[in-house]
Image (tube, rainbow, N blue to C red; front, side, top):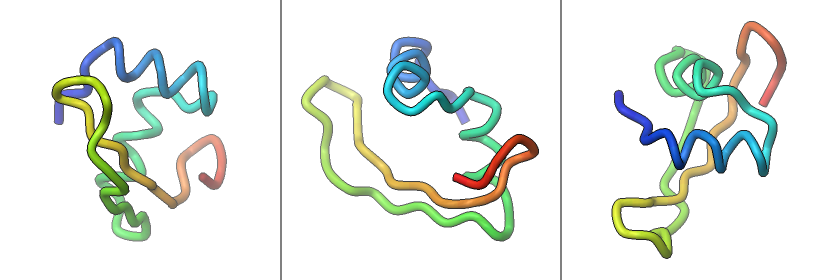
Length: 58
């Protein structure tokens, strides 16, 4: 799973979530995510994700 650096940085600025935590939730059995909407930037889609990481509950 590739997360473009600019999007990973944006997620950190807005939500204080590290890139490895995104992967943990998306690849975990207990996590869930869904597409919310198409982004304003080309190649960007917005998702909501919920799950446990090694650092916190998202």
